[in-house]
Image: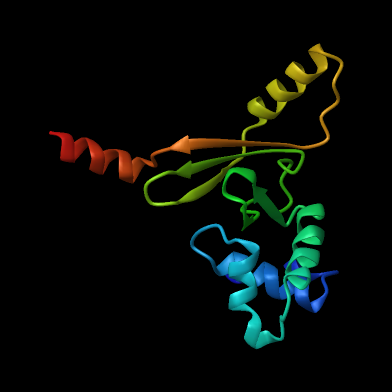
Length: 142
């Protein structure tokens, strides 16, 4: 998936290049992988990538997967999931899917409010097997 001109509105050149690299990726990318991919575009040092990623995360265009120390382009631009977002992460094939669920967001806010906590951002990472890998594992076990 390539980034359109509307997705680049208000982005610097470096931010646009990083967003495009993440949008084309089939799996989450680390900052160093992004740096390697963008060397021909003039990227020379990690701070260039980290500054771009920081702004892209702030704007909700990119999400950081804490458990993988990697980044993915938002799969739901303009969604309400920027304060609370969930991901499924397949431990076998590495496939990552962004899940948008209003019920989950409401439940997180309710849990936090019960202790007087105000959520500004939440990322839920569900790790296991995707449907394809679970099916293959079940077939192999039979």
